[in-house]
Length: 437
Picture 1 (cartoon, rainbow, N blue to C red):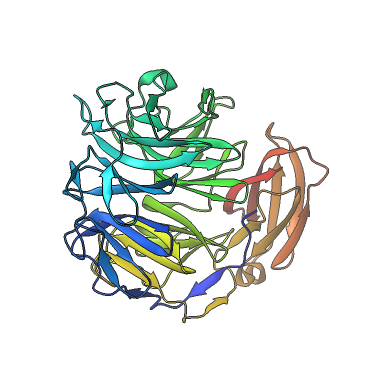
Picture 2 (picture 1 turned 90 degrees about the horizontal axis):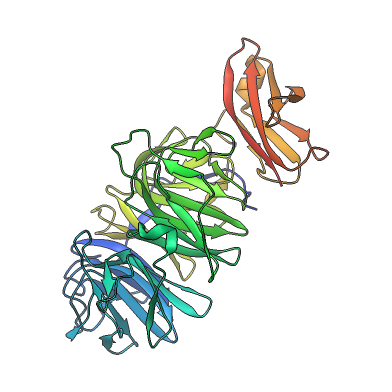
């Protein structure tokens, strides 16, 4: 369960990492006491560099074009992207690194009529390595966007979602399932699904959508925290076909095993990366506000509200990672640092009163909730809460008489509940959902 205090982080929280890179960073990967950065740059390496905590170094001669993904499998690092050579060896957008030299991965990813031949994501699930991206074929076989590799041969899952899923953008494991995100994709189409090594499964007839049918969907980042899965990208709503209900989940959402829910108020922009750090969910991307708070492309979710992390960075964040207990951000920015920066842990993170007017936490849980109101709100007006079940029946009404009020719903069945909080003037404050597990 993600639950923690609201936090305030010093405004000068981010510092450069050496000279950084002379381009931009797409991905960060930690393995064997080294953090690898992949992207588009020529210094301190050709599209790949390594950081040991003190210094940058090249990774042999690197690749001849952009790097998007890293993964580990059977003692090797797999490097994916959009390139034809790695360390001087022929490599069709994927190669291996053994710590000393590159080699062909054993197969080549190929472009097609509607794809560029790009590897976007690499993830091990059970005994196989899954490779996803924008490609039509692997070694002249047509798998369309997702293949498995057992160290000897590839295999395709070409019945998956009817074969239209050619853009696999993210993969992760959660609840013994492989979760798959797609993008860019068409509005209202299948955007997230699961695979259990035998069968594929979408989310029933439910799907993410954007505010306009002309805007593509992007699923950009997964992050698992305990038993919950967080998703970041570019989307506006989640549509529950079962209930004919459309929920606002602007660019970030949480899956609890049953349904997707919003994380407070909207993130205004695109989320590209997620990571869990010191009891905070960190989101990076291209956005200028989170939960109504001004931020610069990076923000922290504390379980009830969003906070800025210092002054952030002055350009998009594409990757986040934890290396030696330090938070790193990579992307296309020039300050602080060139393409990569780290959070300065010498600045204290101190608990503060939540700045949102109303929050309810922990959510979800077994039925014991705490409602937190800004003290100035309580002192200036009477505030009440109403809670409704999914049938629209009011199951609770209570006055909120202090800044922290306990709500007991343990006798209610598991499910989704709607809460509405009103001032004495009838103004609606922060309506939302409660989930009883």
